[in-house]
Amino acid sequence: MPGRSVCSLDEGVSTVDKRLNTPTDLSKKDVTAVTEALNRLLADSYALYLKYKNFHWHLSGRHFRDLHLLFDEHAAQVLGSTDILAERARRIGGTTLRSIGQISELQTLEDNNAEYVAPQAMVDELMRDNQHVVKALRSAHQTADDAKDVATASELEVMIDAAENRAWFLFEIAQDLGEERAAGK
Image (cartoon, rainbow, N blue to C red; front, side, top):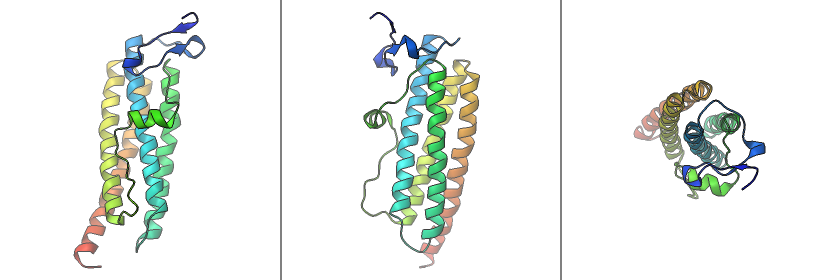
């Protein structure tokens, strides 16, 4: 098609209009690999953000205030990563997510549509999800390293640290909630 540069849809990168084909020194293969990894992370970021907000909105119990504030803080942090991920894909000549449908297709985190989730279960699930995100970030970092995409790798390092920090906080809270539960509080 005239005026278009085509990357295979099977590789996770859509047809790119030349007006969106940002110049880069990375090969098309590397752009495709890094963009695929970034788009999976982006989908998981939106899924995790919505799960944090879901739990934030539907929280009840003794630790309402602390967890309500923590979930909101973590949600804002996760949402803040979305623009970084999407714009990084664009800066290297890739394209990024365009719809909720694409998020649903690419996300690797499970949704939680339960009407009620106990606070301990919320904390445990969010901790596991953040640990999953850390693994996905490390994998994407390796993809960026393999492509010699230092800037993407650098952005991902910051995100790895943030996700590890969220998982750590949730782990410590889970320990405390577990002890309270065992003590019958």
